[in-house]
Length: 213
Image (cartoon, rainbow, N blue to C red; front, side, top):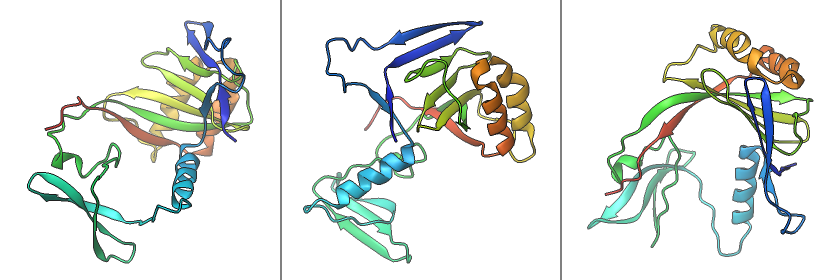
């Protein structure tokens, strides 16, 4: 149920503009795609596991295996808690922003300038179909994009490392009083409904200079 993306729409101070990709000279199927990230990752895992030269092993990596300055593999725990070691000529470390392996490879200087507050808006239409929407709001941007035929992902950037609490209702109040008035009218009711539904998630935005050993 991935959605085609043909460009962006920018909103600021009550005005808006559409910026479409220059696709005139390309095949009609050429476009961006937006989707549920979790579903996409799971499908990739399933596809990789189906290949005849791939063996899927699942576990939680606890450390890298290093010999004479060269990474030889990983140590990991299975679901049953068994400690295992896997060796390979090439080890790819891609364990995300909460990496517990990064310090083995560099001296990370992680900066957290803001946090994303995530909501899913249901059964509504974006002002510009098949376009990602960027609202240059106060104090920071709001992103909106379709992730299925019935759902729109909304990401609200909240400056600083400390965000209003979701559990005690501070976040809902912040979203309704500070953010909702800056949401396009076509999406306002769906935005309020998403807040009331309560499935609000937060994620720190992290940046780090690319400076390996």
